[in-house]
Amino acid sequence: MNGASIPASPLPISARAPGKCIVFGEHAVVHGRPELVLAIDLTTQVIARAGEVPRLEGDADAARAHPYLAEALRRLWPEGSEPLEWTTVSRIPRAAGLGSSAAFTAAVATALLAARGGADRSILAEQSFAIERGAQGVGSPGDTSASVAGGLVAVNGGEGPPLWELHAGDQRWLVRRVRDPGWVWLVAYSGVPRSTADAVRSVGRRLAEPDGPKLLDAFEEVARQGIEAVQREERTETGRWMNENQRLLREVGVSHPRLETLLDALGPSVEGAKLTGAGAGGSIVALPKPGREVEAQRRIERAGGRPFVVRAAPQGAALVLAPP
Image 1: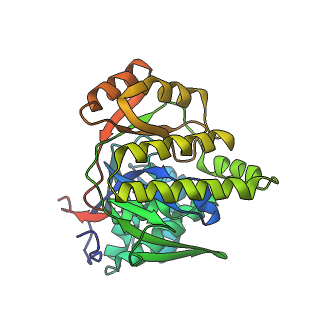
Image 2 (image 1 turned 90 degrees about the horizontal axis):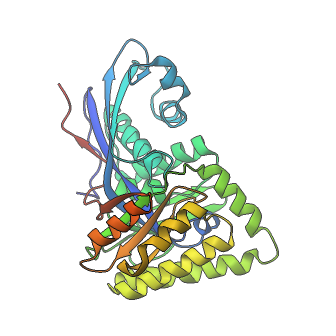
């Protein structure tokens, strides 16, 4: 079902998409290096209805000011089309590095494409990436691809035929499916919001320094080894590469004292852990040792974080039963 096209649907339309966490390769993927992204079973659902003027949660000003909704409508809803009123329900904390914008973008794009007659999933992936990048001004397609595809996806890594190929300027990304080993993961929000665009630009400046190419090569090696460990279902090895990825993220300056507090609090309950997403706040992702998921969750709670025990989302962006 994850590979199915988005069918045509009349209004009102409801669509849902999962959030994500990045297991390996954030920031380096912007420069074409590999990344592994897990679509998590925390979702955002949107409902689009015909209305008199565009509104978001009943507010016309909010609809105009929302960068992702405005960009989606600019790209996918022709001028002169009937106005749409939007409502949303989300389980994903905002500005937490867990894909709230990617899930919202993919769900909105799903609804708009369905209203326009449907589309192949590769078109949904292309448009979702274009919308998010247009709203942020920077970025790579891992987040939106995970929200569109569900499960585990590798960007510029993994094996087998690509799900789709995406471009921005002279940069090119191949997105592939990675088989889900069925593990339980822990993500935890630090309570410190972050800005993806600011963090990406900061890392870009760091990687422009003389040792930048060497750091990018190190990120690539970690991501490739980590993806292979996941494909072999080697939990301990996966955790080791997660820890090494975190060391590199510290080196490029995107960790944060609150993130380090949460990582330290996990102690021996996990195989490995790291920040996920842009960093400089946001969230961490950990792979708990079997049977110690509740312990890891409680350790995070005692340290002041907001934990979620998650699995790979079984489905990517999709239409759901339309409301009356």
